[in-house]
Amino acid sequence: MNKLYFNGSIALYGFLVRSSGWISRPVLMLTAPSTGSCGSSGGDPGIFAPVLDKLLPLARNAWAFGVALLIVIASLGGLFFALKGAAGASVGGSGMTSNAIIGMVAIIIVVLMVFLLLPQLSCMLQSSAPAAPF
Amino acid sequence: MMHAAQILVDILRNAWTAIIGLMVAVAVLAMLYQILKLSVDASLGASMYVAQAVGALIALIIVALYAFLAIPAIVRAVTVSVSISPACGPAAELGQAAAYVMAAIAAVRMAKAAFTAMFSAMSGAGSGMSDAITEAGEAVLGMLLISVAVPVVAAFLGAC
Image (tube, rainbow over all chains, first blue to last red; front, side, top):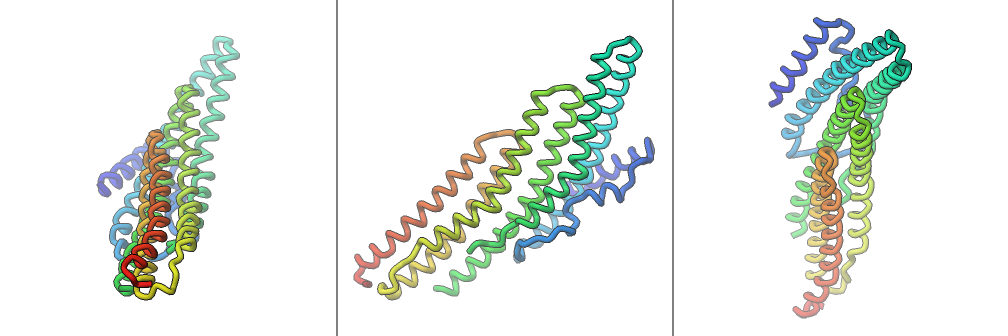
């Protein structure tokens, strides 16, 4: 499963690099929230450490895959809205054009949420992870 | 007896740490999933699904905050409130050890229930959160019953 996610994210990444060239692997990895840059107040997992060592890299790969997928979806959505806006402008449909502009702004906000808000939320969760209360 | 209880509590403490660590990873991935859903719905112009995704995102944050802030507070409060009279001798020691282990088990059960609630919130099923709260109620009630039952049993056996 781990290999599957990893291969999936690598394939998607390769597709993105070949098709556009404006995204790089460091961008995906930098946005990964579980790189250990946030302080964690949790304790030692002890005998469960091997399980976490298996699962956390899988989650990290899933994160990279999800971010890459989001970029593809946002690009396609942006292209769709650009086409819609252009079509609206061509035929004089001001409502269609304004809808397209609003949609594109919404997509930009969603993508910014992923790149700015989610890592901060993740840091907040990691730093507020409680130690065992017993 | 106390040594055996301590070993058990150490294992439960490790389980707590592992569950909380996994919960952070699952919460972040679930939020990413909801944002992916949100972006697809925004691209298609499906405003109702966008609202659902935003609601699920907020629910995930609430479940995570419940797990990280409320569960430790509940466990600490119940552990402090369970006190057995020191006049009961070995029975009191046994009761203290049992209460200590039960608090640890209750904490891990509540963390597991919150973990399940997080999966439910991720998939949009509403029953997970109520299950988590029911689990917390059961754990608190069980510990309070133990705090009443142990002195009664000790008195019945003539230990006090």
